[in-house]
Image (cartoon, rainbow, N blue to C red; front, side, top):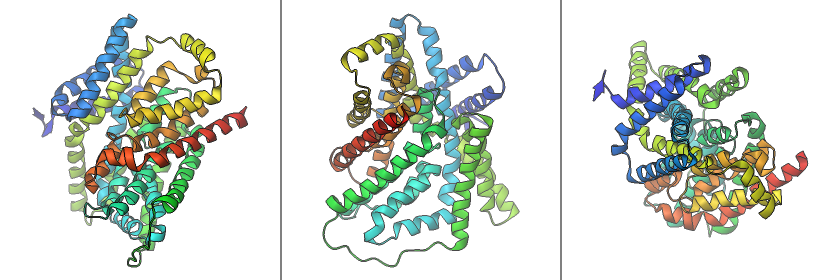
Length: 454
């Protein structure tokens, strides 16, 4: 069924996004039940079209969450809470989708991609990791897709492994600090007292250490033999450099500024800024007034018509939220606190169990969103025994690393498709040696910061 040229589910999704933003300004009690109902309607329309794996994961999580809520004795209220809370993620996906199209079409970003991918072997790993980190930190998956074109199915196996690892490490490490990543939204949702500004500087430092460590690991372990010479690397012109830094910088400043000045959440800030920013961006790239109008209209049409394509992400994140809220009704925080005091009295050891546990769960295919939302519901910082920013930093520090060893994560599946490799090989063979070393470094860093803050 299509209304005004767009599928019904597109208008349902758009209404959810608008209501979520409006609810920040207008205190309307009906927002929660209305958005919950619209999310259920969107899923009912799109579930039959979703991919098999996210459909199974999402439905199982929703089912288990509702069963847990029923056992906990408050099915209706818990279900409403779980579905309505997930509107935050629906808004985030909506906002990010606006940035994908202009990012792929920007001549300056294309030139930046050429500069990154044409670096000589001696510094290519580091250039790729830092380049995709910088682009991905603002453009999310669009930044990864720009640079990932450098890997080819016919590429030598060792080189494919090294470049894929550089792409994964650079992209996923931005989850430690970037407000444009779903990791930050999930962690801030799981720990309501936490503020982005409290963890972002430490998260950025951890990301840089991870990239430097990955580069050193690559040189010592993966790099073998003489390196094939390549042509001189491409260079950015002064105008291209200005345009690239300007677009990424202005977008970042607008979003972070709105978060800090107006006190709104990151998804709401993105929801307010991303659509008009993307429209102005595509208009600025058009050669004439007529072309500007055409490109602006085309962007709006493509984004609205593409909202049903977000079905897989929405289903998994809604499932994780309902699951976490439902299970939390069965595990009172007081009981968990007694358990930890009895069996795991060392707070430092608790942090180690937390970081390595999330990574191991990722390795068996469980996305960190499921684990983190559940942890936020049943294990708040006061029960774990640490300040909120320490717990948030631990969760953010291992989020991206756990996706590197997860054969079903979006990053793994995307790079496996682009490079023609196996997601299982990437997640279970290529990445674990470095990932578990990196998790150890993150754990030590978080423990040291905890003691310094005491």
